[in-house]
Image 1 (cartoon, rainbow, N blue to C red):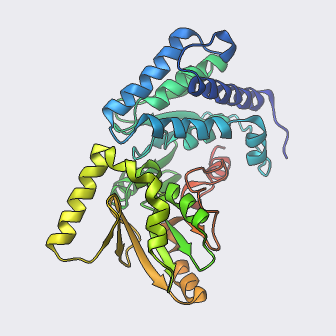
Image 2 (image 1 turned 45 degrees about the horizontal axis):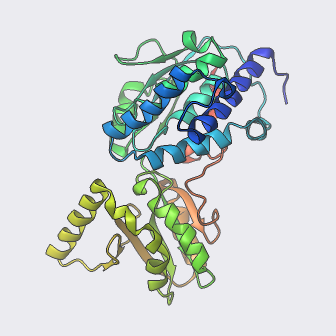
Length: 356
């Protein structure tokens, strides 16, 4: 590894302190004292930001937000950061360049990974947040400022049109990517499109595996690119096993927006006489499409794994995660590590190559 200077060490230490504070913020409903690294006023403001985020975006339940915060608190431990960055060289190119980050708003903190990549490498950052997720990230940046005073001068959360930037990292739909290319294509960039995740089930898939798969399906209500929206099921596998394993998530119907999606999709399928299987809170629909609407899980049977692998290779650029057989373990899709880059594009290497 290349020589690392004090600037990089300072930034890494600040992230570690932030991760520790995040864990304390999650673990305590009442301010426990100065040992958590933040004052009572900041502690209270952060908990208020969780409530406000849920009010502004009803998909962001407190449970969902706490899960996202817990994952990040774990990832920002020093050993995890070191393991992530160990393979890279030139991590302290003190650059005056500015990176514009355009964040999606489908999940809480969905743009946070891009931010910490830029922050660690010393870039200036302009953050354009989605209105669906514009509360939590600014609050975390305020806390980060406690551990690194330079954050205040180098990080800008935009409310106006972005100007004077050198690189662009933008995440959106396939449709918005056309606009990204039109407006920002002349800059060095990462443009991320729609992706989703799949699971491959065979005769050896156990009940325990399927119970873990339920978290990959229902976590974040299926709204993320790492959410499984399509099952490939070995022909002859009893599909009732899947429904039975998912039963622990039946309370998801208590969420009004999810229930509305379920009722709407079910009514459409009934009106159009589209076949589907139903257990009262999720529908399984045999469909070749990878993407499925909220409350619906597409599935497709396969006979030969080799043929399935060939098919998936062709559509690999549409898939974020493959869960199960020949993929990541069941139940792990919603817990990415720092090196699990969206769309498989190495953000750190992109920044190293362009922050000169």
